Length: 145
Image 1 (cartoon, rainbow, N blue to C red):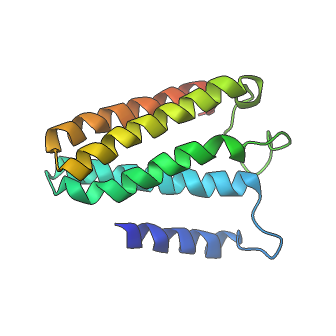
Image 2 (image 1 turned 135 degrees about the horizontal axis):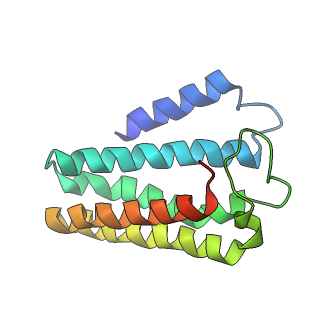
């Protein structure tokens, strides 16, 4: 799963021209990161649906948790528009609320990490709902459709 995501990220960078000498913009970084986050979550959901080995979910959950901690820093002032961003103005006008929403995702991913490490399939299945709820809450308040 990790290899597929790495390959997908490399292909995305190569085909969209994000790998420039001057480096990617904050908008590009957050868009690629959100795509990777989505891929990790899709992989987690697939393992849960297939009743697979939940111990394999610890690293994707850790990646999600680390991304959630980083996310608020990728929305500096001046990146409100451009680059096909779907970021709503509330990210900047309610920065504390946005940081709280991002932290909620990190906490939910932490619950998944613990369940995965313990090999607890029931807890991991419940953690999927928590992650989905955290993602949905952030999208509702901070992402345009």
